[in-house]
Amino acid sequence: MKKESEHVALARKYRPQVFDEVLGQPSVSVTLKNALASGRLHHAYLFTGPRGVGKTTMARILAKALNCEKGPTPLPCGTCDACREIAASRCLDVLEMDAASHTGVDNVRQVIIDTVSLAPSRDRYKVFIIDEAHMLSTQAFNALLKTIEEPPPHVVFILATTEAVKIPATIASRCQRFRFRPVPAELLARHLVLLAGKEGLHVEPGALELLSRSAEGSLRDAVSLLDQCGSAGGEAVTEALVRDLFGFVPQDMLLGVLKAILAKDERGLAGWIPALYAEGIEPAQLLRDLRSACEVLYLQALGLETTADPGLRLLEGSAEQFSFLLRRLDKALGELRFGDSPRLTLELGLFDCLGSAADLGAWVKRLEELERRLGPDSPKASRGEGEGKAVPPASRPAADVAHPQGGEEPDGAAAQAWQSAIAALREEKAALAATLEQARLAVVRGAWTVTFARPFDRDSAERGRALIEAKLASTWGKSVHLEFFVGQNGHRPADELVDPVVTSSPAAQAGTWKDAAEASPAVEPPAGFSKAQHVLGGKVRIVKKPAP
Ligand SMILES: Nc1ncnc2c1ncn2[C@@H]1O[C@H](COP(=O)(O)OP(=O)(O)OP(=O)(O)O)[C@@H](O)[C@H]1O
Ligand SMILES: [Mg+2]
Ligand SMILES: [Zn+2]
Image 1 (cartoon, rainbow, N blue to C red):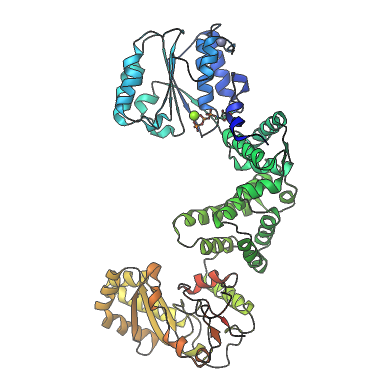
Image 2: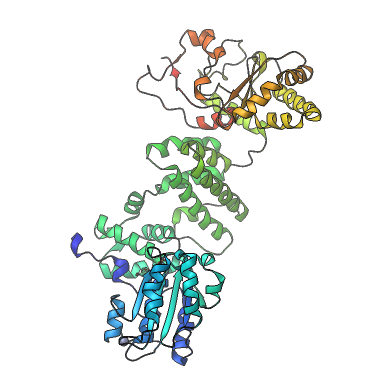
C-alpha cells in the first residue's frame, strides 16, 4: 500500500487538463471550443450544475485556453508557463476566489473590483474564477454587477455554482450560461475502470456498479470512493469490501427484502428485520440502498437500462410497482429526518411498501396476524377465554380502538360512537369538535382515554367535558367517563402509560410477563413489533418477556 504522505488524491491526480478529457459535458466542451476557435469570446460565463461534475475543472481549462502562449486556442499546450501555472493554481492572472469562504462585499472589492482595471501582469487575459458563486452576499453581488456589465476588454469572469437559482437574475442575465449535467453511471464506471487500470487496482464488476451508482452522477465522488477503496483494500477492490467500507447493505439482504416486498410477503419481510439489525445496518442506509435498487429496477422495467447486477436483474416487477416503491421509500426517507425513532420509521416504511395502509381494517387484521406470530403465550392467540389475560405492555397502552368490555362489543363500535358524538358536537361547537378530531381515542377495557397533542387542547376539552360526555352517552348508549391526557403525537406521555387494568389483571400479578429489568439478558421487542405499536399507538417503555 502507498504511504499516506506519498498519496495524491486521485481526483486531483487525474483532473482533466484539456476539454476532451472532461467527461459527460459534451455540449459545454463543444461550445467553448468553437468559441475559442472562432474568437467569439464572451466576457462572463456562468457554469451551473451538480457538485463534482467538472465546473471548476472546465473553468481552469478555459483559463488556460485563453492564456496559453499558443492561444487563445481550443487546445491549450499544457507546457507553457501560463498553462503550467494555471494548472497548479498559481498564476497571477487567473484569480480563483472561493465565494464560500469570501462571501462579503469587502472580499469582492479586494479581489476583484480593485484589480480588475489593472492590466494582466503577463498573460492575455485576467481571468476571475468565482467558485460557489451563490454564496456571495447581496452586497457583494451588487458590487460585482457594474464590473460584470462593462468589464475592461482584457477581463473574463467565470462564475461556478451548484445553486443556479441563488444567482440574482441581474448577474445571470449578463453571463453566458452553461449547464453541467450529472455524469451517467455508465460513464462513471468506464472512467473508474480506466483510473483503476492506471493505479493497478482490480475492481470487481459488483464493486464497480456500487461505486458508480452511489456517486450519483458526481465524478469527484466516484473517484474519491475508488481512492478510499484503494487505500483500504490494497489491489483488490471487491464488492464485499465496498459494501463493508461504505456501510452498504449486503446484497443477499437487499435482495431478500426486495423479493419479500415485491411478493407482498409480509411474513418474509418481517423475517429480515432482525437480521438487518443484527448486521448493524442503519435504517437510512437500508432505505437509500432499496431506493437506489428500485431506481435501477424502474429504469429496467421501462426498458431504458439494464443493470449489470445479476441479482437485481432477476427481480421482476412492473414500472408502476417500482415507481410506487420509490414514492414510499422517499416518504420514509423524509420521515427519517424528522422522526425520533429511526427503526420505527424504517419498519413502517417497509410495511408501507407492501401496499395501501389506508384502511384500518386491513391494519387490524395484519396486527392480529402479527400477534399470533408472537408465540403461544401471545394474548390474542388465546383470546376468548375470558378476562384477565396478560397483555404485552408495549402493545397495550393507548390502544387505538380496542374492544370495550372484554371484546363483547363489535370491533370499532367505540370508534363509531366517538365519531358520531364529534359529528353531533360539530353543530354546536365546531372548534371543540375539530380539537377532538385531532385527538387520539383509546378504549381499553371500558376505560376511555383521549390524548391531545397540546395542553391547550386538553384544557378546551376539559371545559367542554359535560357537553362531550353527553353527546357520547347518546351515541354510545350509556354514560362514559373520559380521561384526558396530553402526549406527543397524541400519545400519552411515558409516565402516564401504566395502565391500571393491565397491572391489576390476575395474570399480570401472577407474573406471566417479566420486567426486562429483571429478565436477563435484556430482551428486544420481537420483529415487527413497532408496526403493532404503530397500529395501537403508545410508546415502548418497558419490554417484558414471558416468564420461563
Ligand atoms: N466531467 C469530468 N470529467 C473528468 N473528471 C472530472 C469531471 N468532473 C469532475 N472530475 C473529477 O473530479 C474532480 C473535481 O471536479 P471539479 O472541481 O471540476 O468539480 P465541480 O463541478 O467544480 O464541483 P463543485 O461544485 O463541488 O465545486 C476533478 O479533479 C476530476 O478529477
Ligand atoms: Mg468547483
Ligand atoms: Zn500553453
